[in-house]
Image 1: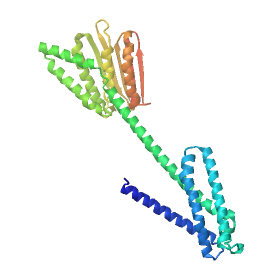
Image 2 (image 1 turned 135 degrees about the horizontal axis):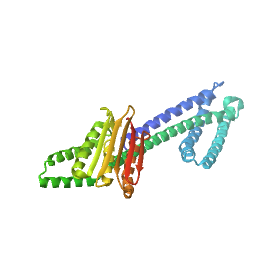
Image 3 (image 1 turned 90 degrees about the horizontal axis):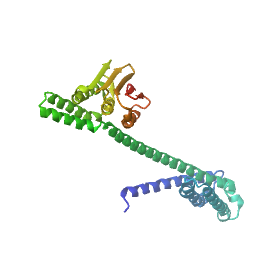
Image 4 (image 1 turned 180 degrees about the horizontal axis):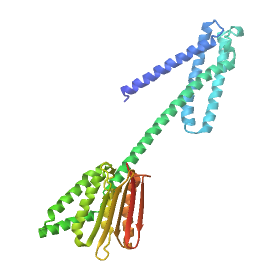
Length: 350
């Protein structure tokens, strides 16, 4: 069923086309009326040319151009353009004879001067065809450009959503074993009714709050990230007891500097996850400082070479996050020796 909007649109197009062809008719009467006072002859001759002009124009703008030129079927475009020009040229010749035979009673002198010349008549007709065809090409080009922009925008929006989904996934890469191990340790402390149990619950609560809510933000204050790293370290200290030697140094930390959430925390978690005891001790050294342009972070831990493959998987996810958030704005260096695993990271301020 035709909608009211569609009907109004078609009526509007019909009115515009009618006004345009009325304008062409006025042009013909003015053009062919040059140096002639026989208005009836001029009007009749112009009216005879109108169907030829209209049909030729519509064939080009609704058939030849959209179906062959726009579709890059150039051979068929040239072929059907030639057919159209031959037929229209024949009809233009017929119009001249119409003016001579029916309008002038075979009196060549009675014809309007311009209508006697086939070249001038053809020029008038094809001028209209060329102008309308050029307008049609411009309209199709603008429509194609608009469609291309919409498609590009849609593709970019889709890519952005995929990037966001991937980023959200990568943010959650803190290993679940940490939570299980911490809960098990907490359970053991609870059974012993240890004094550390309430503090452990509080620190775990703070850390979970950070993991669940703060990572929704694209960036957080570096001081917040440091506080949660400290809570994380305290929880691990309770688990490892005397088998952990960790040093965390912070220097020149600005209160206004921001960083992607869980970025540094994940490096720290990775050290605990893949670190190995050496002489019955897991040793971890962390250094964090700020300059006027960058955040400087380094972490190293004792390890064994057999762990390098597993560490590579976690660090690959971290590097993906860095590429998405700090593209060309970071430098990451990883040293993996037989006994020590070290990471140096420099982040430009956002």
